[in-house]
Amino acid sequence: FHVQKFYTYVLDQGQKIALEAIAKPPTDFKSPRDLFEKTLAHEHTVTGLINNLYDLAQKEKDPATSSMLHWFIDEQVEEEASPTEILDKMKLIGKEGGGLYMLDKELGTRVYTPPAVPVK
Image 1 (spheres, rainbow, N blue to C red):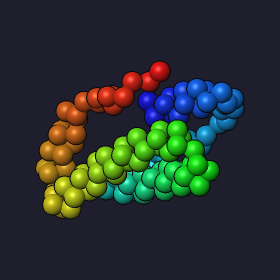
Image 2: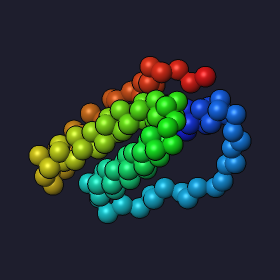
Image 3: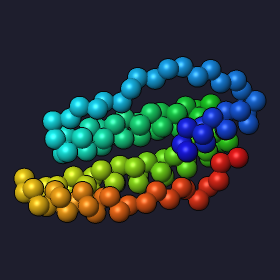
Image 4: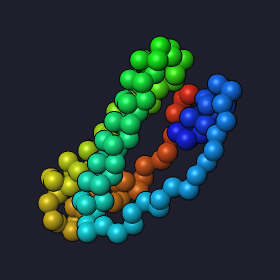
């Protein structure tokens, strides 16, 4: 959804898009905790990149792009909160297998709900 939102915005601005290959995400992790720590670090990186784009749009006096990026800035709060919440629960659980099982069960019930903002 997020990529589609950027893609649509760039096309709506009359620009061309050249898609290139991206690296595969990592698949090897030392532990479930390691996975979520790396996920959170990645989200921090994404937040920084979006903030840099927003700063550039402000510098270029481009209110349309600033407005579009504001949605992503707000969205990143949620994107960072999710792995933070999971890591906080893992800290409470410790190394207990039963606690990790219950967390896995809880996470398995989550349902993806697309953002309310429709993609054109």
